[in-house]
Image (cartoon, rainbow over all chains, first blue to last red; front, side, top):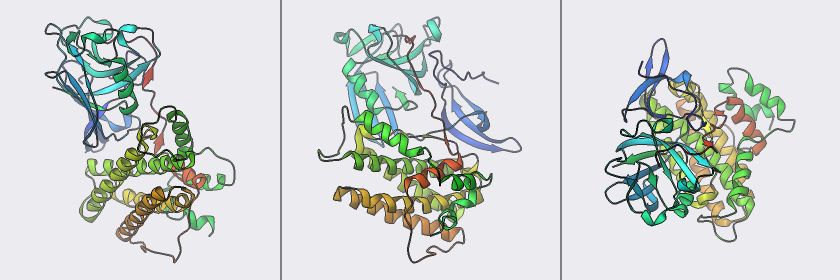
Length: 179
Length: 229
């Protein structure tokens, strides 16, 4: 056993998993390989399909380019969104790899996160004592002048107008590639 | 046409009797599975539409397009999961691969037209049907027959000639899908001289009776973010 998977995220939403493979094992039936939101980033595991709820097929993918400070959303291979971003400083870098959007937060009172904040399965490897474990978010900001640049604790910040636009296009569950 | 005839293709996977119950309940008012989702999305999305829809697009057309998108989500998810699980072989696997590609293309096309007015995909649990070739075959026959009948009912209600043409072009492809899987299932590809349309109340009831569409997962929250910032 690698880890116990909670049914809830630290934010209180349902804890969703990205399905990345499957195998049928007799007599226990179908098992799914899933991507886990734990450290080290990139950890995967097998879970019985019967332990999971419903699934949804998505044709979106968010690609975050740490070198050029830009996020691009693709739908069915075509780019439908592009915006400059702020990413982690050298001392608190944004982790690279394949992740997914776990949830979306709205109607909170925190200007620093802007109007909308997406939670991802990525976690900082350096700020591990951060509240809730140091998950990487994709959110707005009250300091748009810092974007683009390497200015965050690891989160991916974008201008509030951009994160609102992204929220109209990107469903929760969307795979995220950070490179 | 008698109700039993309409339900015939779908009854093949009525393993727990839920479909029979649904058929009985068709005589009473019921909640529209896809209908509710479509209407809600349309009302919410009209605030700031960003789509390829023309200025003259009427709410009725948008609702119908979203309704069709709901059916396409169901079919695309079904075939994609079957393909991914790899339990199908030979002609059946080919059918799932090709038809799955078509259904995903239909989803993409509806997204392109509807833009932000597109309803979100429901969440599905196919309960093992996609990993059992016999169950897959029966269900695929039912889904394709259902799609043909649903499009047949909805298409004449579209007010835009452009959308009508698009719907008809999908409808004929769904009919080819139906003939293909019927042949693989040993069922007459074209059993009757005339097809009957199926209104949304009956389509929704049949889909609901499968229990393939499960409760939407709560993936949003309103607490303060604790992300690293």
